[in-house]
Structure formats: structure tokens, C-alpha cells
Amino acid sequence: MSIKSTNDIDKTIGSRILHCRKVAKMSQAELAEKLGISRQQVCFYEKASCRVSGSRLSEIANIFNKPFNFFFDQ
Picture 1 (tube, helix red, strand yellow):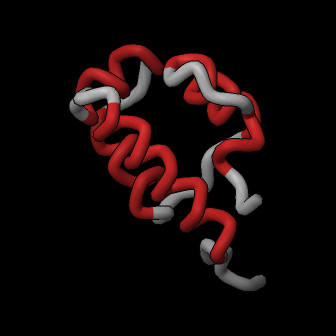
Picture 2 (cartoon, rainbow, N blue to C red):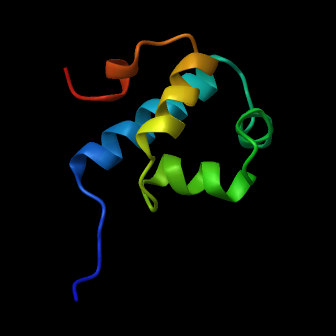
């Protein structure tokens, strides 16, 4: 059984979430509240310590009014 680790795509997604949050002048706590999760979970997403599910990423895209593919390399 191997340990799952994050990859470059996870890091790109996390950095783009962070970018959107900073541009919106939103705290991690504010984003967490909108998503119904903990501030710590937002921190994990941004650092790519945890992977973001497709449905969660869709919620994040809607919050920041971004297309889903914005969070991937283009």
C-alpha cells in the first residue's frame, strides 16, 4: 500500500485558489465559511497538502466566478 502524495496539478490548483482568495481580499476563514469547511482545510487545499475534489473545486470556482478549467495549467 503506497502513500498518496500531491503532484504538480494539485500544487497549481492550490496556488490558484490562494490567488483568487487574495484578489478577492477574502480570508481563509471567510472562504471556509462559504464552503462549510474548516479554515484549516482551506489551508491544506492552498498548500496542496490535501487534494480538492471535483465537486469542491466547482464550488470554489463558483464563489470566485471563474470557469472550472481556470484552476488547471493552460
